[in-house]
Image 1 (tube, rainbow, N blue to C red):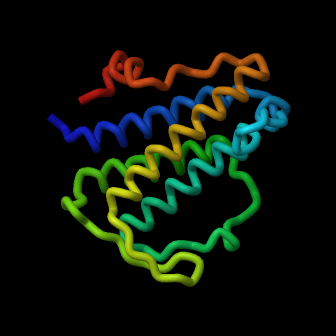
Image 2: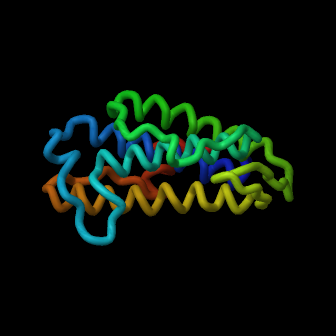
Length: 163
């Protein structure tokens, strides 16, 4: 059996792609609708936020230098580009979950300051971050009259994706 951690990251990738695919048919007005209180931003902005942060988490897990947020481009990639980038970073996170040794510690620099953090903390943050923002996007979609896709664990299992 594949480890539970790997399955969590496989679900995360599946849910991200499922949500992006559901958003590909939306109008610009729906993608850019003013969000409700308590959510990160518009659907488009939140999808971008999820993908950029997953890329950042993967870089940290690979021991690569992290880009300061001030150096992040303000333009929003197309949904097709976000999907491709989400696929790549999601697969990378699955691979990292498969390979990271127990107790692995990450070291690097963020905002000019050195950090040391257990890899497990970053893995937990990656799952939690994406889950929270997918739920926020689902709320905004509902407010603009769009039924969000099912992204729960039962649907993941029923889709045959659970290995």
